[in-house]
Each structure stands twice: as C-alpha cells, then as structure tokens.
Image (cartoon, rainbow, N blue to C red; front, side, top):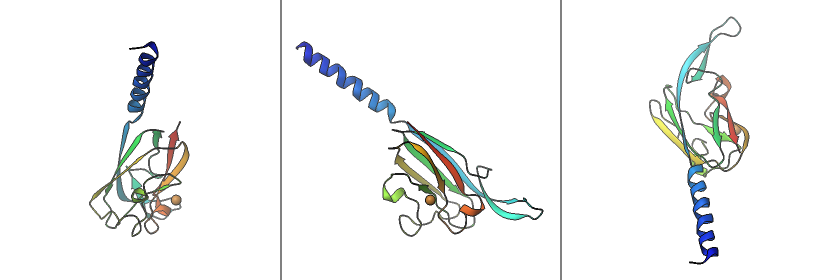
Length: 142
Ligand SMILES: [Cu+2]
C-alpha cells in the first residue's frame, strides 16, 4: 500500500472516530408537577418542573443527541416546544399538530440531534402552562 493510501486511511479513521465521539446521547428527565407560589401575599397555582420555576436549564453541545423524558404528573395534558430549534417536525411539541398532548401520568420522550449552537428557550405549548412556570433556557454550545 502506498504512502498516500495509508495517509488517506489514517485521516478517515480519525474523522470517523471524532464523528462517533461527538454523537453523545444527553438525557434529561423532567418531572412536571403542580405547585403553589406566593409572590404577592396570595397563593396561586403554578407548575414546577423538577421542583423549580423556571424549568431546568438544558445544556447540549452541537453534535449531541438530545433525549428528554417528560414525566407528566399533572392532571391535564402537557407538551414541550423547543423554540427556534431545528429538529424533525414530530419533535416540535405542538399539541394536535405535531403530536397528541402528553397525557396525565404518562412519560413522553423527545429526541433530536443538536445541529446548531446558541442560546434558546423551551416552553409548554399547552394552554397557559408556559405563563405559570413552564419556560426554561436551552444552551447549545459549539
Ligand atoms: Cu416558542
């Protein structure tokens, strides 16, 4: 085998290796629960995810595969929309358009490859859930 052929093989092996190591599966589990907040002397219903408002900041690196498990512990349907993120349409999180609502006491898995970088946000696309706590940051690094 010639020197050039060997070089081509080595370069290809390096390239494939780096491609494979960049395809990390990054998993988050989000537990969606009713809660009460009191910001002004009066208790109001709110929704906490993993016990917090806003929802947890999700961090990914370009090239990752996102796996986000949504555990709906509400008494109503929910959904998550990944604002401004390029993804397969079925993962877009718009109830009755790209999926059915995530039913109470069920788990839904969103999965999509991260093919961009930037600071984004994600939110519920069901009713007024976004306004009462279901919004969070999405950090996609280079
Ligand atoms: Cu949005």
